[in-house]
Length: 210
Image 1 (cartoon, rainbow, N blue to C red):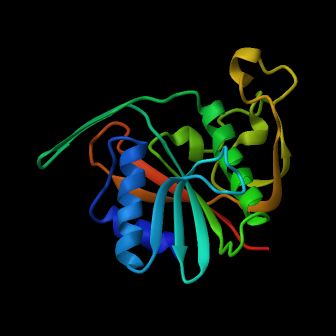
Image 2: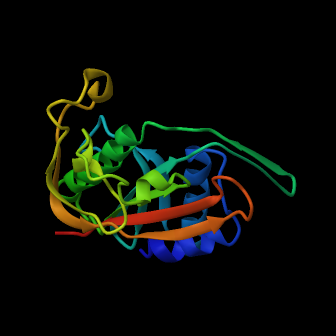
């Protein structure tokens, strides 16, 4: 599976998406074209983790490849041919970062549980520079452990600072435990000239088989 190659192919015809579900379907369709013999499932529930739903699961050549997606956006309106995009503002980047790393941990849990695990991927696509940029200030924040800017190395236990408020951590109190080490590298996906919030970048976090 070469997810980077498929993202490169996708960006030539879909520079942006209406929502995460749109991104999910478009990438799944691209994967199906690239691997015509693959069995591709959306919102797949693994037998080993019945309470989990994987965004895209690819079964091909006797191997399985779980893929989790995140599409975190700032407000953007754009017309392109017959399509009109009115993309919402997600905000809450601290929670977004937590969820991204939680997805990595979720796929790591599948690596040890599913037969034929060929590799997993977390793909994050965003036009919010807060995700890929270094922090502007040196002062500590409640979410430092979850930063995923370009060049960040994520490994071990990631947890909120002790002073983090309950409103922020509600439902996400548990630390994220990463068995592997992941160097975050962002690359450009698309750029809409003279459009506010028109630069989209993405990163692919790859979880290798054991």
